[in-house]
Image 1: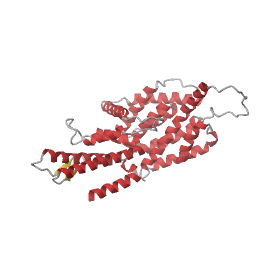
Image 2: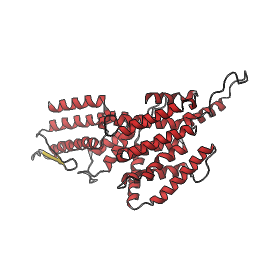
Image 3: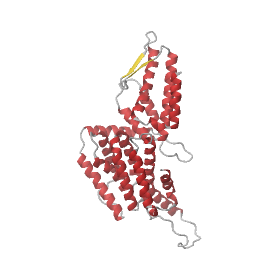
Image 4: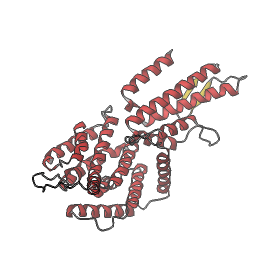
Length: 379
């Protein structure tokens, strides 16, 4: 009876507020408890003539007593595993990037049964939940693709970079490379011309940013210069691919190194103002619609190829701002129940709104900008 009441209470809380699960301790406790109950069910099947009642998780520091009933243990495991799947799915729909980072951190931690010989139910549920994470809406008429390949790649990348950092990293060279990329991108933006200089290809820049992110997470103290470069380089380049990858890096940095949150939010706020001053993205006037009275009337059919090129160009120019607004929205939803952690997010959101209002006359009125505009209203 107590178990059913507790599960019903947890269901009501997480249905109304799934962000309560977005904590490393909560995720680890939930999955390790499922593993502990599974050990009890398995022991009831294996040791039918020598019952075992006590089960201990040294990872959690918890000892669980279960009655000598195979049916009860099987039912309890089925209920707990189903509840864990349901709660992780709720949290994943609310904040997929944050949950993915928490699951990666959980899988990287040692466990009581992490011997590589037997299945670990907690790890299996973590992988199952990660596979069901979805980013964005699926294409019309199709189902959303599974996230297994992306999760496995980012997990392998995380382990590789952490191991590389453990063997020694030339931080000074990493800073020089990222600073050179930032100077080239910012100089091109201020001069309103194509970038020139040591920008390198997008893949190389993203790899360096990933390396810098995991170095900040693993270092004993927060490297403030690297945090600034992690915030500024993607926005100075203002490339959709780089900014999309940067949202994952920023999430990893905030979830695994909370001490860097205030500095990162301050830099993102300053970068937003700089983008407005440089007339980038949402504040660009280069794709304003022409007045119909200034255009010569023509009865020829419109050029669909030219319209498609213009649509793609404008969409690429607005996408980085939309990704940044989405990141701020999701981050606020994750920490709004934590008064000690949400100050920097709230402060950054208010400053971004003030900067937007100060440059409101520069905002584009193009029809494709309606999405980012409504996202700003939702902030």
